[in-house]
Length: 277
Image 1 (tube, rainbow, N blue to C red):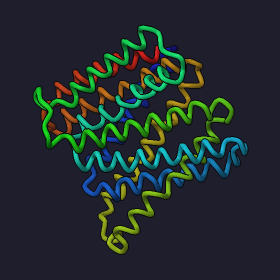
Image 2: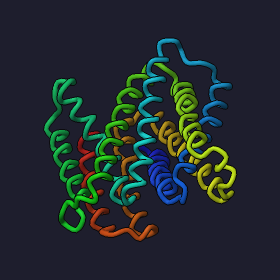
Image 3: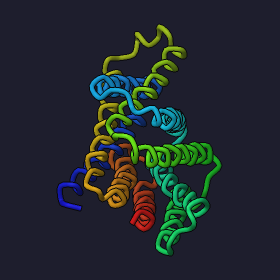
């Protein structure tokens, strides 16, 4: 990869970890996620108007990916309700490539030895992330279960998207996928809060909407980086967001065992590099 593509990909990783930290840190997470969904509607709708509809054969993938994204968002929201950011975020992101690699073992005819080694390294890193101070506590289990489930949904839309963009223009596909998934969290927020939404502080509204824009910027930068043709390298480098997330939890959120989790997250990234490259 050129220095420019490396820079773009690293910026995308920073932005991805940042919007997740925003989503975790906002005082009213339901409103925060609803506004992230609203930003998806605005940007996805604009893209859909400009670019037009995807080809008919792409609609099943658009709908399936949107469904996986909605499940991922709901589980991520639940994860952030239950656990600390520096633990939940790396586990969720690290589970996905691990699952994709296992999928390739079962359905793709196996993996070369270095990718199998990568799966083992990711597994070791995820186990380390699950341990608080050297042991797995019962209190951490719900958050870890939600994070692993989040990773399963990430793996789901990763596999669907990889197949879809091979035959569909990426920008068209992404615009419609975000437009379809975007309304779900805003609708849930309206149903659960009703008129109470009118009393949400403007500061919370602004933070949630900015989080959505940062999320879209991170996704867009990855798409730009992938136009270089170095898809596997971009995918591996992007997952440095796992380490960045652990560091954010340590430095800005004051979470326990922060540096231990940062080291464990780095182990996960090493495994992802082995799997992707």
